Length: 500
Image 1 (cartoon, rainbow, N blue to C red):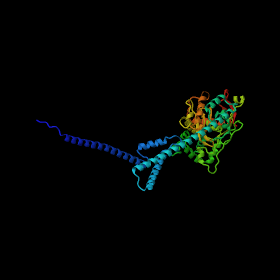
Image 2 (image 1 turned 90 degrees about the vertical axis):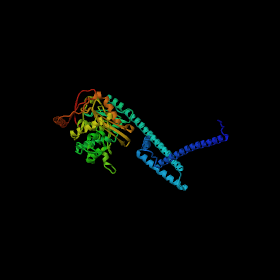
Image 3 (image 1 turned 45 degrees about the horizontal axis):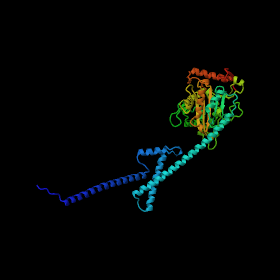
Image 4 (image 1 turned 120 degrees about the vertical axis):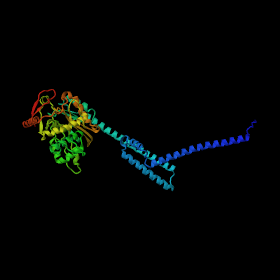
């Protein structure tokens, strides 16, 4: 068998054909990849264009994330969900108008690339403008904070200077020390007195406590509540306020403004002013101090919003000492006392109780006010005054007065046998977050060993016991005598004095 060698020409031709086919295959693969990549970029650009034209909407999750990021900005630049939605609509309208204007200038429809570039330019400009606006808002916020801090520091320095000028004659040293320590380096005043006798234990910052008037804010709801109960416009379970069932106890505890505005509208302007005057507002307390501010009652004049008087105390001005006598009257059953500072040793050893008048309010009215005041401290707006070892009754108040923020807390304790009435008023930043209630709470806790008792929730009495207590009170009122159950510091003698 004879073997023939391959023809060299045929081998060369086959190799040439194979090389050409290999090159064509590789070129097609590369071209296909480039085409696919180009198609992917066009699809992505088209989606981006549609997304921009829709105002930046992508998915629900993405939209929620954008809204969250926009709202989580600090300070005044924080945006609400409504603001975010409005801004998106503005951007979408601006993008649409800009694209139409560009098409009119060029006289032809825009290509996808031109459209995408224009949308990106608009979005970039919007982001820059938004960032600049946020920076301006943050700068304004920081400037406002700096101004408020300067005002607060000036006010605190002024208060410390006024405290240093206080006349300490006749004040209780321990009560004074605790009250000053509780107030600290804050702009405010503290009044501590005996609600049963009217003895003033201490007035920290006497200039503010005796001679300066403050807007009582929500503490005026004590007057509104007493007036509403006395005029029989507050039933046991009244539907008032925001349209849901709310009773007086919850309204006092949580300081519900609509409730007391509706109650006040049933009372009327004239009767409200009459009850406020009967409870000692708008007149001097008669304390044995050189100068005392009488306060101010509202006057009906054009532009006066009557309903705000019953919950926000518009038109009222009171001194801390007036609030002290008011809450003392609620604690002792309606006796409006004349507060006194025992200046001499004789006055301290034999303290005479002076009663200005017996407020014509029934015992049932006073008792119905108590649960709301206790609730304010136990679970309501005055929780920072809570004392686990005794029951505190109080009322908070926070609002904007003529000199900025005003915070108040008026209270007494223990509930069953009141021995301390504490009123705290603060101004400026110190008035926020119920700081006055925290000051009063510290005073009660620090003086608990001397004035407090064990937890003393009010014990229910029988009808016979209530009638006997009322008869005893009426007999004492007819005799015009008061017994000082809480003696002056260092004494143990109860004193009987004629009501003045």
